[in-house]
Length: 370
Image 1 (cartoon, helix red, strand yellow):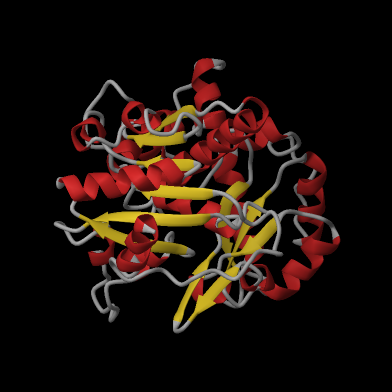
Image 2: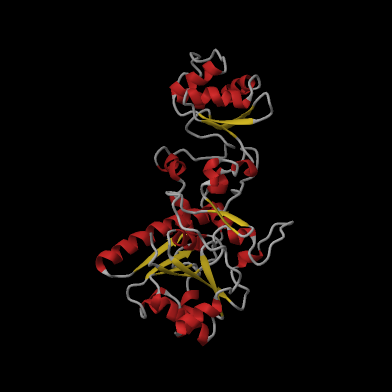
């Protein structure tokens, strides 16, 4: 799809590299420049307690498929010249330096576009171009309200188990870069596209933001429950020891659920409307929980599916990758496996495995000289 596109990745950790892998999946040639002095992308060293991997840790492998790795001393004149030559030949640069660092290294938007006027430059920062604080996902989760909302009412604020703010910021940058490439195709002009983790996070508060901005209701921790819908997000134990999560979004769905569970509460004034169910959530959950203990999960899911009621069995990760939907977006090479970042189509090219540190340095530099 983007076979003629050349991407230079000057990014590390998750957000920026995720964008690089996205372009690789679409056919672009992606060169990842890593710092020779520091051993490259820090996530190469982020290994689990019992993980037995080489310089391609499981974490690193999550967002670095389809790339070539070039190791350069970013503070040397030869390293800078190599980056300048790569930028002069590239269509897109992806950078994740905190404000001021790119300028010190000589690889800022202004410095590289002096060599390539049509360059599309994507920059991810923690807090925007005017704030040089280091931005890490967990801190952004804390400061953007996500942790205050996540967890149980009687427990502490809780970090999400995935660096979701990084993932969300990456999606924002992908959208911005694609629009910039469309502009370039029409006008020939390059662009600077900037995304901050903090704004990506706040933007993604979605209905929780409008609960405060519109309804003036301060969202609080509710465990897995939804502040505006019930029963939605709660999970219930079944007779065979599995947990089923319900996502009831309408009165019709609730009535059908009560019939399946043989509950005589469809006309109970406490539960007739969604708003009344939200108000009487505790009593409702006790009744649904008792009814769930009399059914087996798989049988219940068959009945629920026939009635088009949104619900699902909570699964561990190993079971997730037994699903056909997961198998369709796997990438594999050697003993490594990963997941594509782009899932709009499954007809994508075979990807190179995540690169070893500096694996392609010699070949890429020789290509620059020739």
